[in-house]
Image (cartoon, rainbow, N blue to C red):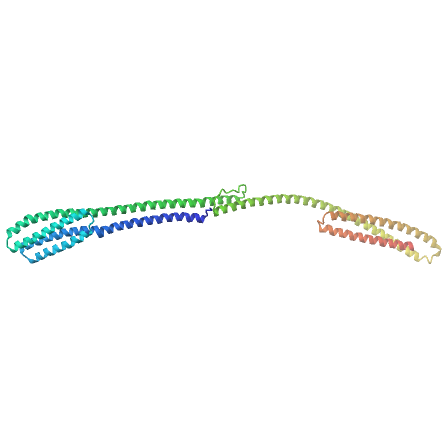
Length: 410
């Protein structure tokens, strides 16, 4: 399964949250237990101790009321004695209903018996008081009353000690539970912090290491080093995909640069070939220019020959115009004219042959220029100019031939 960055973060924080939830759950459970212990102390055991103390107070109140009545004969003391006895019975019944241990129940029963004996002793002393027998009720109080009081004090001390031990035990349990809660909170808290730190370290390491590797690779590429395209990142998450894409990008970039280098070499070679071709073209153009100059010189010479021929023809025409006046010289002038016409025909034929050579030369030049692949528009213009010159030369040759023919006819 692909472990993405999102899943890693969710898993790490989820683990921390689970530990925190466990900490809260355990703390809540222990605090609830501690609360139950304290509730038991305050609602059950402490009232038992208070009631036990109350029994002792009520018995001492009975003894004090009894002695007060015997000394003063005040009916209020006697009523207080009865009231204290009634409160004792009520308190004893409430306490008995809350006791669970047999030992405490037995002690409470013994205390009730001693209290009942004390109550009966009080009633007897009250009767002796009413009979005015002070020696008897005094002796009875000093002997039986003291004995009952002493036994009651011993039993009530045992009963209070038992209840106090229960309260102390509950307090100790509560303290132990509170200490356990504190230890548990500390342990789970430390564990949560440790796990959180470990998870944070793992997540930060799993995120920072590949990012640092990608950063170093990017710096190498930015510096122009494409010799190493591997980043060493093998994460199976978004960062791993980014690293794979980065490696592929670097590989493609290296391929592009390699192709650019090859193309640059080809361009350089083509440039050298083009330079060589340009040099050859320049040389050919110079040669063509020299040829054109030669052709132009030949054309000028031909033009001069044609002009000379035209002048000769004009001269002959002028002379022929005077033939009618010089009939006697017709034969000689005709013969001379025929000879000059023959020479002019030969000259014209030579001129035509020369023009044909020029035309052939121009056609060869046109083929050479075509072979250059139309690399220069000027060369094309020159070829066109040469063709025009050739056409004009042919026209001049044709005109010369026509003039020669006319001259021959004349």
